Length: 243
Image (cartoon, rainbow, N blue to C red; front, side):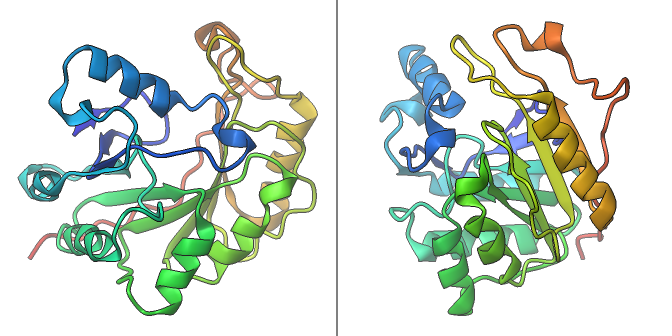
């Protein structure tokens, strides 16, 4: 686990690492770049670089956290990658269920696999498991429909990196939308009208809206203000004691 600089979470937990590219949003994957750095630094967990790797030892980590946490699960991977066995995914869900004092935020681009596993009854949804899908442009909005069909108690969208307009989203059953621009050496541009349109869609649908960043080559300089204010809305966090 690690403390996180990601604005919408507190820390990260990676029971799997590695992934591969499946859509335009993956082009400049930050996790792939970070994995190469960590491998070069000799970090054992990343010795296989960005190959899908299962870390059974990580399953015990959440039991050691003494205070309630908001946790981004698999910032360095995709839990619903086809090469992650369903038996291991179910183990991850069991850990999350047995730690109700924490909120676990799971994010995937593989909404089809997520929906299939859910339809088979293999995923045990509890109040503290927030399930999200990445929606970088209007070519992948089917992911929203697939997410909506799952039994997740809290459902969210990550429109990051936002690389195109996403008009007229169906936000029925969606609790939260995160928007962010791409950062790095060659970031693709994000237009302000794309962001404000999504913000307005959220306001109209009474969905929490979180604006993460404008991005660019210097994301600290471009900042997080949209229309002169910071948008940090989140779903209400319901924490239970671990009994």
